[in-house]
Amino acid sequence: MPLDALGTAYGPCLSVDLQALAHNWQIVRAACPDSSVGAVLKNDAYGLGVALVAPRLWRLGCRDFWVSSLDEGLALQACLPVDAVDARQQGLRVWVLNGLGGGQAQDFAPHGLLPALTGAHELAALCRQPLPGDRRLPVAVHLDTGLTRVGFDSAGWAQLGADSALWRAAQPRLWLTHLGRFHDPEAPQCQQQRQRFVQWTARLPAAARSIATSSSVFAGQKWHFEHVRVGSALWGVPTSERIQVPLRPVARLHAPVLRVADVAAGTEVGYAGGYIAPRDCRIATVAMGYGDGLPFSLANRGTMVLAGRSAPIVGGVAMGMVALDVSDYAPGQVQPGMWAEVYGTQQPLTQLAAAAEVPPNVLLTLSARLAPQRRAVDGAS
Image (tube, rainbow, N blue to C red; front, side):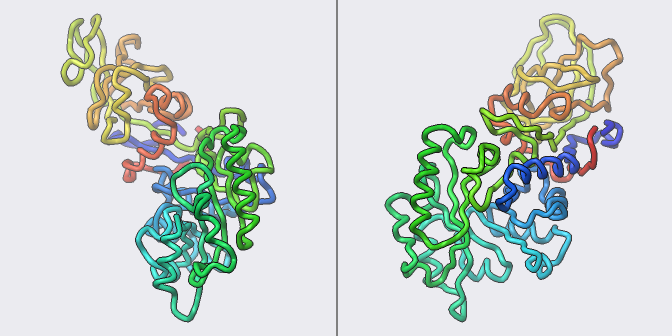
């Protein structure tokens, strides 16, 4: 996408490449042809905007979506290109990772949302406030096989037998667990989690099973079971330490240059002299800061790309601005109104994340703050 297509330089702009998203979806589907695939769209689709990506995924054939909360589930349904009745008839299932979240069956059933219950307390809550007419709420159930976050652990899963009174108000549709070392499914701890998951689910009521996420979906059929949950891979963010997959980055973030100024050696740049010019320098101020999701840890480290070249970040990261040293550019080559690439095709998201010492998804989800400045593009740049 040409930079001039970004329009007027008011502030940071996040571009979402829907063609790359479609490519990644097909890569995932090819990896697990015998399993259903659920797109993980929590946190507003990792900051990319559920209203941008969900309609495309629906048209690509995705019928399972994972969100964090009831509110996210309702927002997802509202942006699909079909009404709620047609969506359900076509197989839509919206799974809510945080379970009831303090709510009750009546909050979920009218909308067809399926909570992923986080423990015995939620099953008990459904029994105390069941749906009218002896209806049972379809649910997923977390099994804590080793992550120690949510779900039934080794001391609690036995409560879930087919004859358990806890099933008076709920109907299990899916058993799920999450790997503690999701980036390396071949780790011994992950193998132990898989073994535990197989053993536990063999003694539970029949339902689909899900353990694979964006890394383990490419680690072989033994991880796929009946359902896989994919977030990072859809956005082209690599999560595996062992397997290289031809994914395409979906997100590109640019920010405009506000000012270019020549400064003398010894000049302080940024708050409290966060950087002192070691020589006569040229400093470009870019409209991107921690208020827009740029990590504060990038102060005096990391780069952005201007005119096809990397320019180092100098000084601190302010709420809405950051400084780049463009001394090595020809005079006049960098001008106010130009777009700096924060991450994208020239500087991968993973490269900037490494400089900030954060996982790539941390940078991606921080872009949720840029909702008014997100736009979809369809095609490679």
